[in-house]
Length: 158
Image 1 (cartoon, one colour):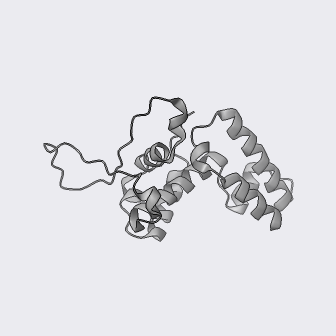
Image 2 (cartoon, one colour):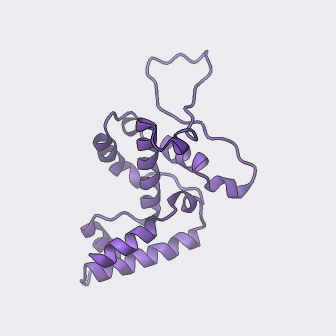
């Protein structure tokens, strides 16, 4: 249990920066998570089966999940204010009148590749890739429940 909490906090550290990191770096983190799964839940099963038993997501999915939850909480509560001001709703042109409003965020254009790792870019890109049911959830519990099926399909920039 102690190993799980220590390693999980290390894996979750700076998720927004890891959103667009190289596949090699993500694979290193995945190896660390697989090793932790073998320690926490010993057995002869594969690391994938052990992660499923422990209800752990892969590192790539975990990063996107955390970013999506932080973005949802920030948008719905306005707290913390420094993140709330970074998230801008996308407002379509006036000639697009849709009866239903789809919650999407505008993604600012960044010239420098390092800027793609910023929360202002990574959070909207992850949130916009979610399904409509997930984005339109009114409660955090509903959002998290709808997010689970989306975790495996979230796009990741490589």
